[in-house]
Length: 235
Image 1 (cartoon, one colour):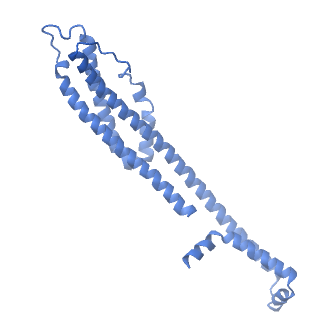
Image 2 (spheres, helix red, strand yellow):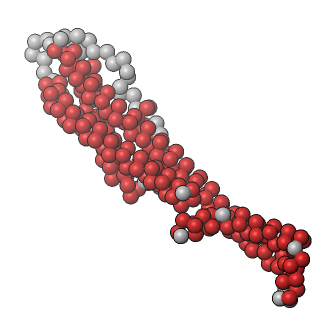
Image 3 (cartoon, rainbow, N blue to C red):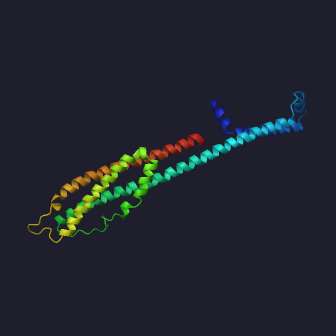
């Protein structure tokens, strides 16, 4: 029964039009139908106007539903677009974190092997790290504040920290390259490079975990929005 009610609601406008055409043809071609109307003292014009009015009402209802659907569809698409931008930035930051860690390890390896470390990736350039960060931060505050803002703030702090570690180590290495491995050479930073590596490994693991956590939350939001739209307007 519920299935039929749902079908009628979904196709109410078409059913009304069919009824209207049936009444029209019945009035034109059926003398019995005209006699019944005459016997009941029902003006045929009133009947047509009544059915037409009902049809117009249903049409207005359908138009309102369509506008509401289009609004929700545009909102869903907007959230998906914002989610994709945020997710992309999260993975860029995770990749930067890994590059910072690998750079510190490569510097240690160069010191141990008495080789020159060459930064081919220009790892300390902040252009790619800063790119779209304000935009992504704004999206998170406006659209996803209750879901991932705290984790986002944690991630920003940790990426800044691991970037600082890499910068300190690389700067000390570049400034003292000619003195490294010479007799009586001392450098507070380079002598503690293992500590920087240990701390940076911890930070990098935490950044990876935060990335996966926020990515999962954002994908869940996208999936739920899609399912809600389908359930409400399509199914």
